[in-house]
Length: 258
Length: 253
Image (cartoon, rainbow over all chains, first blue to last red; front, side, top):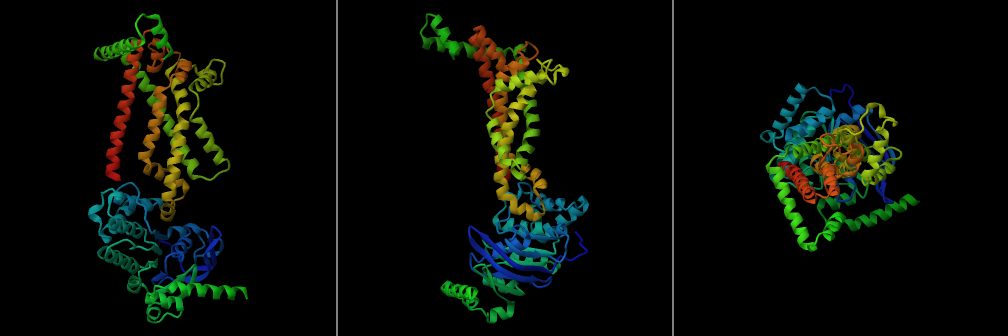
Protein backbone atom coordinates (compact mmCIF):
# COMPACT_ATOMS: atom_id res chain seq x y z
CA UNK A 1 0.00 0.00 0.00
CA UNK A 2 2.99 2.28 0.00
CA UNK A 3 2.09 4.09 -3.13
CA UNK A 4 4.89 6.14 -4.60
CA UNK A 5 2.42 8.40 -6.41
CA UNK A 6 0.13 10.50 -4.27
CA UNK A 7 -3.45 10.14 -5.51
CA UNK A 8 -4.34 13.67 -4.46
CA UNK A 9 -5.22 16.29 -5.53
CA UNK A 10 -8.70 15.15 -6.52
CA UNK A 11 -10.38 17.25 -9.15
CA UNK A 12 -14.10 17.29 -9.96
CA UNK A 13 -15.08 18.92 -13.20
CA UNK A 14 -18.64 19.73 -14.15
CA UNK A 15 -19.97 16.76 -12.21
CA UNK A 16 -23.72 16.17 -12.35
CA UNK A 17 -25.86 13.29 -11.22
CA UNK A 18 -29.52 12.64 -11.74
CA UNK A 19 -31.98 10.00 -10.62
CA UNK A 20 -35.62 9.70 -11.56
CA UNK A 21 -35.41 12.80 -13.73
CA UNK A 22 -34.24 14.91 -10.77
CA UNK A 23 -30.82 16.48 -10.82
CA UNK A 24 -29.36 15.70 -7.43
CA UNK A 25 -25.85 17.01 -8.04
CA UNK A 26 -25.51 20.05 -10.23
CA UNK A 27 -22.40 21.19 -12.11
CA UNK A 28 -19.91 20.61 -9.35
CA UNK A 29 -16.41 21.99 -9.70
CA UNK A 30 -13.87 21.60 -6.97
CA UNK A 31 -10.42 20.41 -6.06
CA UNK A 32 -9.25 18.67 -2.90
CA UNK A 33 -5.64 19.02 -1.81
CA UNK A 34 -3.84 16.67 0.52
CA UNK A 35 -3.64 18.64 3.72
CA UNK A 36 -6.75 20.29 5.20
CA UNK A 37 -9.68 18.47 6.76
CA UNK A 38 -12.61 19.27 4.50
CA UNK A 39 -16.05 19.15 6.04
CA UNK A 40 -19.13 19.27 3.87
CA UNK A 41 -22.18 20.70 5.57
CA UNK A 42 -25.69 21.34 4.42
CA UNK A 43 -29.25 20.30 5.17
CA UNK A 44 -30.73 16.87 4.49
CA UNK A 45 -31.07 16.15 0.81
CA UNK A 46 -28.35 18.61 -0.17
CA UNK A 47 -26.51 15.77 -1.91
CA UNK A 48 -23.67 15.41 0.59
CA UNK A 49 -23.65 11.61 0.73
CA UNK A 50 -24.06 11.36 -3.01
CA UNK A 51 -21.18 13.75 -3.47
CA UNK A 52 -18.91 11.59 -1.31
CA UNK A 53 -19.95 8.42 -3.11
CA UNK A 54 -19.21 10.02 -6.47
CA UNK A 55 -15.76 11.11 -5.27
CA UNK A 56 -15.11 7.65 -3.86
CA UNK A 57 -16.10 6.05 -7.14
CA UNK A 58 -19.10 4.08 -5.85
CA UNK A 59 -21.44 5.96 -8.16
CA UNK A 60 -20.40 7.16 -11.60
CA UNK A 61 -21.47 10.75 -12.37
CA UNK A 62 -23.78 11.29 -15.33
CA UNK A 63 -21.69 14.09 -16.71
CA UNK A 64 -18.29 15.48 -15.86
CA UNK A 65 -15.10 13.88 -14.56
CA UNK A 66 -13.69 12.76 -11.27
CA UNK A 67 -9.97 13.02 -11.73
CA UNK A 68 -7.25 11.84 -9.38
CA UNK A 69 -3.61 12.77 -9.59
CA UNK A 70 -2.63 9.11 -10.08
CA UNK A 71 -3.68 7.68 -13.44
CA UNK A 72 -3.52 4.09 -12.18
CA UNK A 73 -7.15 3.25 -11.42
CA UNK A 74 -6.34 0.31 -9.16
CA UNK A 75 -3.91 2.24 -7.04
CA UNK A 76 -6.42 5.09 -6.75
CA UNK A 77 -9.10 2.67 -5.64
CA UNK A 78 -6.98 0.92 -3.04
CA UNK A 79 -5.44 4.07 -1.57
CA UNK A 80 -8.71 5.59 -0.49
CA UNK A 81 -11.34 4.42 1.95
CA UNK A 82 -14.79 5.43 3.00
CA UNK A 83 -16.84 5.04 6.09
CA UNK A 84 -20.42 4.73 4.94
CA UNK A 85 -23.28 6.30 6.81
CA UNK A 86 -24.41 2.82 7.82
CA UNK A 87 -21.27 0.67 7.77
CA UNK A 88 -21.96 -2.99 7.00
CA UNK A 89 -20.28 -5.43 9.35
CA UNK A 90 -19.38 -8.80 7.89
CA UNK A 91 -20.74 -11.84 9.73
CA UNK A 92 -17.45 -12.69 11.35
CA UNK A 93 -15.34 -11.55 14.26
CA UNK A 94 -14.22 -7.97 14.87
CA UNK A 95 -10.61 -8.69 13.92
CA UNK A 96 -11.67 -10.70 10.83
CA UNK A 97 -13.60 -7.63 9.70
CA UNK A 98 -10.37 -5.59 9.77
CA UNK A 99 -8.41 -8.39 8.12
CA UNK A 100 -10.84 -8.58 5.21
CA UNK A 101 -9.89 -5.45 3.19
CA UNK A 102 -6.21 -6.08 3.93
CA UNK A 103 -6.54 -9.54 2.44
CA UNK A 104 -8.11 -8.00 -0.65
CA UNK A 105 -4.96 -5.88 -0.94
CA UNK A 106 -2.86 -9.06 -0.72
CA UNK A 107 -0.92 -7.90 2.30
CA UNK A 108 1.09 -10.77 3.80
CA UNK A 109 -0.27 -12.27 6.98
CA UNK A 110 2.45 -11.16 9.38
CA UNK A 111 2.15 -7.55 8.27
CA UNK A 112 -1.63 -7.83 8.41
CA UNK A 113 -1.57 -8.98 12.01
CA UNK A 114 0.38 -5.91 13.12
CA UNK A 115 -1.89 -3.56 11.17
CA UNK A 116 -5.00 -5.17 12.67
CA UNK A 117 -3.63 -5.09 16.22
CA UNK A 118 -2.64 -1.44 15.79
CA UNK A 119 -6.03 -0.46 14.48
CA UNK A 120 -7.83 -2.37 17.24
CA UNK A 121 -5.79 -0.65 19.93
CA UNK A 122 -6.01 2.81 18.41
CA UNK A 123 -9.78 2.54 18.05
CA UNK A 124 -10.05 1.27 21.61
CA UNK A 125 -11.79 -1.98 20.75
CA UNK A 126 -8.94 -4.43 21.34
CA UNK A 127 -10.92 -6.25 24.04
CA UNK A 128 -13.66 -6.97 21.49
CA UNK A 129 -11.37 -8.55 18.91
CA UNK A 130 -12.96 -12.00 19.02
CA UNK A 131 -16.56 -10.85 19.33
CA UNK A 132 -18.87 -11.33 16.37
CA UNK A 133 -19.05 -7.92 14.71
CA UNK A 134 -22.80 -7.90 14.20
CA UNK A 135 -23.67 -8.04 17.88
CA UNK A 136 -21.68 -4.92 18.80
CA UNK A 137 -23.50 -1.76 19.86
CA UNK A 138 -23.86 1.02 17.29
CA UNK A 139 -21.05 3.00 18.90
CA UNK A 140 -18.72 -0.01 18.89
CA UNK A 141 -19.64 -0.81 15.30
CA UNK A 142 -18.77 2.75 14.36
CA UNK A 143 -15.38 2.38 16.04
CA UNK A 144 -14.86 -0.92 14.26
CA UNK A 145 -15.73 0.71 10.94
CA UNK A 146 -13.08 3.35 11.69
CA UNK A 147 -10.53 0.74 12.73
CA UNK A 148 -11.24 -1.13 9.49
CA UNK A 149 -10.46 1.89 7.34
CA UNK A 150 -7.60 2.95 9.56
CA UNK A 151 -5.73 -0.31 9.04
CA UNK A 152 -5.76 0.45 5.31
CA UNK A 153 -3.66 3.59 5.89
CA UNK A 154 -5.49 5.31 3.04
CA UNK A 155 -4.30 8.57 1.55
CA UNK A 156 -7.87 9.82 1.55
CA UNK A 157 -10.65 8.91 3.95
CA UNK A 158 -14.25 9.81 3.21
CA UNK A 159 -16.59 9.82 6.18
CA UNK A 160 -20.34 10.10 5.76
CA UNK A 161 -21.99 11.36 8.95
CA UNK A 162 -19.66 9.27 11.13
CA UNK A 163 -21.44 10.20 14.37
CA UNK A 164 -25.03 10.53 13.18
CA UNK A 165 -26.62 8.29 15.79
CA UNK A 166 -24.08 8.36 18.61
CA UNK A 167 -24.26 9.79 22.13
CA UNK A 168 -21.80 12.53 23.15
CA UNK A 169 -19.26 10.13 24.67
CA UNK A 170 -19.15 7.91 21.59
CA UNK A 171 -19.11 10.99 19.35
CA UNK A 172 -16.09 12.27 21.25
CA UNK A 173 -14.31 8.93 20.89
CA UNK A 174 -15.02 8.80 17.16
CA UNK A 175 -13.82 12.37 16.65
CA UNK A 176 -10.60 11.55 18.50
CA UNK A 177 -10.02 8.61 16.18
CA UNK A 178 -10.65 10.79 13.14
CA UNK A 179 -8.15 13.31 14.48
CA UNK A 180 -5.56 10.57 15.00
CA UNK A 181 -6.10 9.23 11.48
CA UNK A 182 -5.58 12.74 10.11
CA UNK A 183 -2.46 13.15 12.22
CA UNK A 184 -0.99 10.13 10.44
CA UNK A 185 -1.24 11.98 7.16
CA UNK A 186 -4.62 10.90 5.82
CA UNK A 187 -6.71 13.47 4.04
CA UNK A 188 -10.15 13.75 5.67
CA UNK A 189 -13.26 14.56 3.66
CA UNK A 190 -16.39 14.22 5.74
CA UNK A 191 -20.01 15.25 5.83
CA UNK A 192 -22.01 16.27 8.85
CA UNK A 193 -25.07 18.31 9.66
CA UNK A 194 -23.82 18.88 13.18
CA UNK A 195 -22.43 22.41 13.09
CA UNK A 196 -20.61 22.07 16.41
CA UNK A 197 -18.82 19.02 15.06
CA UNK A 198 -17.93 20.87 11.87
CA UNK A 199 -16.41 23.63 14.00
CA UNK A 200 -14.41 21.10 16.02
CA UNK A 201 -13.00 19.19 13.08
CA UNK A 202 -12.96 21.32 9.97
CA UNK A 203 -10.05 23.17 8.45
CA UNK A 204 -12.26 24.15 5.57
CA UNK A 205 -16.00 24.10 5.02
CA UNK A 206 -17.91 23.26 1.88
CA UNK A 207 -21.54 24.32 2.06
CA UNK A 208 -23.92 22.35 -0.13
CA UNK A 209 -27.52 23.09 -0.88
CA UNK A 210 -29.86 21.24 -3.25
CA UNK A 211 -27.07 19.60 -5.18
CA UNK A 212 -24.94 22.69 -5.55
CA UNK A 213 -21.71 23.67 -3.86
CA UNK A 214 -22.60 27.20 -2.78
CA UNK A 215 -19.65 28.21 -0.68
CA UNK A 216 -16.20 27.00 0.21
CA UNK A 217 -14.08 28.77 2.79
CA UNK A 218 -11.59 28.20 5.59
CA UNK A 219 -13.51 27.09 8.66
CA UNK A 220 -12.67 30.12 10.78
CA UNK A 221 -13.84 32.68 8.27
CA UNK A 222 -16.86 30.59 7.28
CA UNK A 223 -18.21 30.45 10.81
CA UNK A 224 -17.29 34.11 11.35
CA UNK A 225 -19.36 35.24 8.44
CA UNK A 226 -20.46 33.04 5.59
CA UNK A 227 -20.76 34.93 2.32
CA UNK A 228 -23.69 33.01 0.92
CA UNK A 229 -27.07 34.11 2.32
CA UNK A 230 -28.29 30.52 2.61
CA UNK A 231 -25.15 29.50 4.44
CA UNK A 232 -25.69 32.46 6.80
CA UNK A 233 -29.18 31.27 7.54
CA UNK A 234 -27.99 27.68 7.97
CA UNK A 235 -25.20 28.64 10.34
CA UNK A 236 -27.51 30.83 12.39
CA UNK A 237 -29.88 27.91 12.59
CA UNK A 238 -32.82 29.77 11.13
CA UNK A 239 -35.61 27.32 10.69
CA UNK A 240 -37.07 29.07 7.69
CA UNK A 241 -33.88 29.12 5.67
CA UNK A 242 -35.50 26.84 3.09
CA UNK A 243 -37.83 29.67 2.04
CA UNK A 244 -34.76 31.59 1.09
CA UNK A 245 -33.82 28.48 -0.83
CA UNK A 246 -36.84 28.72 -3.09
CA UNK A 247 -36.07 32.34 -3.93
CA UNK A 248 -32.48 31.40 -4.47
CA UNK A 249 -33.33 28.62 -6.83
CA UNK A 250 -35.59 30.85 -8.87
CA UNK A 251 -32.80 33.38 -9.13
CA UNK A 252 -30.24 30.88 -10.26
CA UNK A 253 -32.70 29.35 -12.71
CA UNK A 254 -33.33 32.77 -14.17
CA UNK A 255 -29.64 33.31 -14.45
CA UNK A 256 -29.28 29.98 -16.14
CA UNK A 257 -32.02 30.84 -18.63
CA UNK A 258 -30.66 34.20 -19.58
CA UNK B 1 -53.11 -43.93 -1.46
CA UNK B 2 -54.82 -45.70 -4.35
CA UNK B 3 -53.42 -49.00 -3.12
CA UNK B 4 -54.80 -48.39 0.35
CA UNK B 5 -58.29 -47.96 -1.05
CA UNK B 6 -58.06 -51.13 -3.11
CA UNK B 7 -56.94 -53.00 -0.05
CA UNK B 8 -59.87 -51.64 1.90
CA UNK B 9 -62.45 -52.73 -0.63
CA UNK B 10 -60.98 -56.21 -0.69
CA UNK B 11 -61.26 -56.67 3.07
CA UNK B 12 -64.55 -56.94 4.89
CA UNK B 13 -63.52 -54.40 7.48
CA UNK B 14 -64.77 -50.83 7.24
CA UNK B 15 -62.36 -48.33 5.74
CA UNK B 16 -61.74 -46.53 9.05
CA UNK B 17 -60.78 -49.55 11.09
CA UNK B 18 -58.75 -50.82 8.18
CA UNK B 19 -56.67 -47.66 8.14
CA UNK B 20 -56.32 -47.72 11.89
CA UNK B 21 -55.09 -51.29 11.74
CA UNK B 22 -52.70 -50.46 8.94
CA UNK B 23 -51.22 -47.59 10.93
CA UNK B 24 -51.01 -49.61 14.07
CA UNK B 25 -49.33 -52.42 12.21
CA UNK B 26 -47.10 -49.98 10.40
CA UNK B 27 -45.84 -48.43 13.59
CA UNK B 28 -45.34 -51.86 15.07
CA UNK B 29 -43.44 -52.92 11.94
CA UNK B 30 -41.32 -49.81 12.03
CA UNK B 31 -40.48 -50.23 15.69
CA UNK B 32 -39.75 -53.88 15.12
CA UNK B 33 -37.35 -53.08 12.32
CA UNK B 34 -35.64 -50.41 14.38
CA UNK B 35 -35.39 -52.35 17.62
CA UNK B 36 -33.96 -55.42 15.95
CA UNK B 37 -31.53 -53.29 13.95
CA UNK B 38 -32.73 -55.19 10.92
CA UNK B 39 -29.64 -55.49 8.76
CA UNK B 40 -31.56 -55.09 5.49
CA UNK B 41 -33.16 -51.93 6.82
CA UNK B 42 -29.83 -50.52 7.97
CA UNK B 43 -28.38 -51.24 4.56
CA UNK B 44 -31.26 -49.42 2.85
CA UNK B 45 -31.08 -46.45 5.22
CA UNK B 46 -27.33 -46.32 4.81
CA UNK B 47 -27.51 -46.31 1.04
CA UNK B 48 -30.28 -43.69 1.07
CA UNK B 49 -28.15 -41.38 3.17
CA UNK B 50 -25.04 -42.13 1.16
CA UNK B 51 -26.72 -41.35 -2.18
CA UNK B 52 -28.60 -38.25 -1.04
CA UNK B 53 -25.76 -36.74 0.99
CA UNK B 54 -23.25 -37.31 -1.81
CA UNK B 55 -25.69 -35.76 -4.29
CA UNK B 56 -26.25 -32.76 -2.01
CA UNK B 57 -22.54 -32.32 -1.50
CA UNK B 58 -21.81 -32.29 -5.24
CA UNK B 59 -24.89 -30.19 -6.02
CA UNK B 60 -23.78 -27.61 -3.43
CA UNK B 61 -20.30 -27.41 -4.91
CA UNK B 62 -21.87 -26.67 -8.28
CA UNK B 63 -25.02 -24.83 -7.23
CA UNK B 64 -23.73 -22.35 -4.68
CA UNK B 65 -21.11 -20.65 -6.89
CA UNK B 66 -23.38 -20.93 -9.93
CA UNK B 67 -26.28 -19.20 -8.18
CA UNK B 68 -23.97 -16.57 -6.71
CA UNK B 69 -22.37 -15.92 -10.11
CA UNK B 70 -25.76 -15.37 -11.72
CA UNK B 71 -26.61 -12.96 -8.91
CA UNK B 72 -23.35 -10.99 -9.08
CA UNK B 73 -22.13 -10.95 -12.66
CA UNK B 74 -23.68 -9.02 -15.50
CA UNK B 75 -23.57 -11.04 -18.69
CA UNK B 76 -25.86 -11.47 -21.68
CA UNK B 77 -28.60 -14.00 -21.04
CA UNK B 78 -28.47 -13.54 -17.27
CA UNK B 79 -32.22 -13.11 -16.94
CA UNK B 80 -32.79 -16.13 -19.10
CA UNK B 81 -30.57 -18.14 -16.78
CA UNK B 82 -32.50 -17.00 -13.70
CA UNK B 83 -35.82 -17.99 -15.27
CA UNK B 84 -34.36 -21.27 -16.49
CA UNK B 85 -33.08 -22.12 -13.02
CA UNK B 86 -36.43 -21.36 -11.44
CA UNK B 87 -38.15 -23.53 -14.02
CA UNK B 88 -35.67 -26.37 -13.50
CA UNK B 89 -36.51 -26.40 -9.79
CA UNK B 90 -39.69 -28.19 -10.77
CA UNK B 91 -38.07 -30.83 -12.99
CA UNK B 92 -40.08 -34.07 -12.81
CA UNK B 93 -37.79 -36.74 -11.28
CA UNK B 94 -38.89 -39.39 -13.79
CA UNK B 95 -37.84 -37.17 -16.68
CA UNK B 96 -34.45 -36.59 -15.09
CA UNK B 97 -34.21 -40.31 -14.45
CA UNK B 98 -35.00 -41.06 -18.06
CA UNK B 99 -32.44 -38.58 -19.38
CA UNK B 100 -29.72 -39.88 -17.07
CA UNK B 101 -30.77 -43.44 -17.98
CA UNK B 102 -30.41 -42.72 -21.69
CA UNK B 103 -27.02 -41.10 -21.30
CA UNK B 104 -25.67 -43.86 -19.04
CA UNK B 105 -27.13 -46.82 -20.92
CA UNK B 106 -24.74 -48.93 -23.00
CA UNK B 107 -25.62 -47.12 -26.22
CA UNK B 108 -25.62 -43.69 -24.57
CA UNK B 109 -22.76 -41.14 -24.58
CA UNK B 110 -21.49 -42.26 -21.15
CA UNK B 111 -22.29 -45.93 -21.65
CA UNK B 112 -18.62 -46.96 -21.62
CA UNK B 113 -18.40 -46.27 -17.89
CA UNK B 114 -21.01 -48.95 -17.19
CA UNK B 115 -22.60 -46.89 -14.44
CA UNK B 116 -26.23 -47.75 -14.99
CA UNK B 117 -27.92 -49.54 -12.05
CA UNK B 118 -25.22 -48.41 -9.63
CA UNK B 119 -25.33 -46.01 -6.68
CA UNK B 120 -23.16 -43.65 -8.74
CA UNK B 121 -25.91 -43.40 -11.35
CA UNK B 122 -28.39 -42.57 -8.62
CA UNK B 123 -26.10 -39.85 -7.28
CA UNK B 124 -25.76 -38.39 -10.78
CA UNK B 125 -29.53 -38.31 -11.22
CA UNK B 126 -30.05 -36.61 -7.87
CA UNK B 127 -27.33 -34.08 -8.58
CA UNK B 128 -29.19 -33.13 -11.77
CA UNK B 129 -32.40 -32.84 -9.79
CA UNK B 130 -31.06 -30.85 -6.88
CA UNK B 131 -28.47 -28.51 -8.39
CA UNK B 132 -31.12 -26.19 -9.91
CA UNK B 133 -32.87 -25.89 -6.54
CA UNK B 134 -29.71 -24.96 -4.70
CA UNK B 135 -28.58 -22.60 -7.48
CA UNK B 136 -31.93 -20.83 -7.76
CA UNK B 137 -32.30 -20.32 -4.01
CA UNK B 138 -28.65 -19.23 -3.76
CA UNK B 139 -29.18 -16.67 -6.51
CA UNK B 140 -32.03 -15.13 -4.55
CA UNK B 141 -30.15 -15.09 -1.25
CA UNK B 142 -26.97 -13.62 -2.75
CA UNK B 143 -28.84 -11.04 -4.79
CA UNK B 144 -30.57 -9.72 -1.64
CA UNK B 145 -27.32 -9.77 0.30
CA UNK B 146 -25.47 -7.94 -2.49
CA UNK B 147 -28.00 -5.11 -2.24
CA UNK B 148 -27.01 -4.65 1.38
CA UNK B 149 -23.26 -5.22 0.97
CA UNK B 150 -22.49 -3.74 -2.43
CA UNK B 151 -21.31 -0.25 -1.47
CA UNK B 152 -19.40 -1.52 1.55
CA UNK B 153 -17.57 -4.30 -0.27
CA UNK B 154 -16.71 -2.18 -3.30
CA UNK B 155 -15.48 0.55 -0.97
CA UNK B 156 -13.25 -1.92 0.87
CA UNK B 157 -11.67 -2.82 -2.46
CA UNK B 158 -13.63 -5.89 -3.54
CA UNK B 159 -15.03 -6.56 -7.00
CA UNK B 160 -17.86 -8.93 -7.93
CA UNK B 161 -15.41 -11.82 -8.29
CA UNK B 162 -13.80 -11.39 -4.88
CA UNK B 163 -17.20 -10.59 -3.36
CA UNK B 164 -18.55 -13.99 -4.41
CA UNK B 165 -16.90 -16.09 -1.66
CA UNK B 166 -17.48 -13.29 0.85
CA UNK B 167 -21.21 -13.25 0.17
CA UNK B 168 -21.47 -17.04 0.17
CA UNK B 169 -19.86 -17.04 3.60
CA UNK B 170 -21.93 -14.17 4.97
CA UNK B 171 -25.11 -15.71 3.60
CA UNK B 172 -24.29 -19.08 5.12
CA UNK B 173 -27.28 -19.19 7.46
CA UNK B 174 -29.79 -18.62 4.67
CA UNK B 175 -27.89 -20.89 2.31
CA UNK B 176 -28.17 -23.78 4.76
CA UNK B 177 -31.92 -23.60 4.15
CA UNK B 178 -31.33 -23.79 0.40
CA UNK B 179 -29.20 -26.88 0.88
CA UNK B 180 -31.82 -28.43 3.17
CA UNK B 181 -34.47 -27.84 0.52
CA UNK B 182 -32.23 -29.73 -1.88
CA UNK B 183 -31.71 -32.52 0.63
CA UNK B 184 -35.46 -32.80 1.11
CA UNK B 185 -36.00 -33.24 -2.59
CA UNK B 186 -33.14 -35.69 -3.00
CA UNK B 187 -34.14 -37.95 -0.13
CA UNK B 188 -37.84 -37.89 -0.99
CA UNK B 189 -37.81 -38.52 -4.73
CA UNK B 190 -38.37 -42.01 -6.08
CA UNK B 191 -38.77 -41.66 -9.83
CA UNK B 192 -35.19 -40.88 -10.80
CA UNK B 193 -33.38 -43.37 -8.55
CA UNK B 194 -35.89 -46.08 -9.54
CA UNK B 195 -35.15 -45.65 -13.23
CA UNK B 196 -31.36 -45.34 -13.08
CA UNK B 197 -30.82 -47.54 -10.01
CA UNK B 198 -33.33 -50.25 -10.71
CA UNK B 199 -34.11 -50.96 -7.02
CA UNK B 200 -31.78 -53.96 -6.91
CA UNK B 201 -31.72 -55.63 -3.49
CA UNK B 202 -28.41 -55.06 -1.62
CA UNK B 203 -27.23 -52.89 -4.53
CA UNK B 204 -29.38 -49.91 -5.33
CA UNK B 205 -32.36 -50.23 -3.00
CA UNK B 206 -33.04 -47.03 -1.06
CA UNK B 207 -35.87 -46.05 1.27
CA UNK B 208 -38.16 -44.59 -1.38
CA UNK B 209 -37.76 -47.41 -3.88
CA UNK B 210 -38.18 -49.96 -1.09
CA UNK B 211 -41.44 -48.29 -0.08
CA UNK B 212 -42.66 -48.31 -3.67
CA UNK B 213 -41.78 -52.01 -3.91
CA UNK B 214 -43.52 -52.98 -0.66
CA UNK B 215 -46.62 -51.06 -1.74
CA UNK B 216 -46.76 -52.93 -5.04
CA UNK B 217 -46.23 -56.22 -3.20
CA UNK B 218 -49.14 -55.31 -0.94
CA UNK B 219 -47.14 -55.23 2.31
CA UNK B 220 -48.52 -51.87 3.32
CA UNK B 221 -47.48 -52.18 6.94
CA UNK B 222 -43.82 -52.60 6.03
CA UNK B 223 -44.13 -49.80 3.46
CA UNK B 224 -45.63 -47.48 6.02
CA UNK B 225 -43.03 -48.54 8.55
CA UNK B 226 -40.29 -47.61 6.12
CA UNK B 227 -42.15 -44.37 5.42
CA UNK B 228 -42.18 -43.50 9.10
CA UNK B 229 -38.46 -44.17 9.36
CA UNK B 230 -37.82 -41.98 6.30
CA UNK B 231 -39.89 -39.22 7.86
CA UNK B 232 -38.00 -39.46 11.14
CA UNK B 233 -34.70 -39.43 9.30
CA UNK B 234 -35.65 -36.29 7.40
CA UNK B 235 -36.97 -34.69 10.59
CA UNK B 236 -33.76 -35.60 12.36
CA UNK B 237 -31.51 -34.10 9.71
CA UNK B 238 -33.59 -30.91 9.47
CA UNK B 239 -33.80 -30.60 13.24
CA UNK B 240 -30.08 -31.03 13.70
CA UNK B 241 -29.23 -28.49 11.02
CA UNK B 242 -31.82 -26.08 12.40
CA UNK B 243 -30.34 -26.32 15.88
CA UNK B 244 -26.81 -25.69 14.61
CA UNK B 245 -28.01 -22.79 12.50
CA UNK B 246 -29.95 -21.18 15.36
CA UNK B 247 -26.97 -21.43 17.68
CA UNK B 248 -24.73 -19.85 15.05
CA UNK B 249 -27.20 -17.07 14.31
CA UNK B 250 -27.53 -16.27 17.99
CA UNK B 251 -23.77 -15.90 18.08
CA UNK B 252 -23.43 -13.79 14.97
CA UNK B 253 -26.78 -11.95 14.84
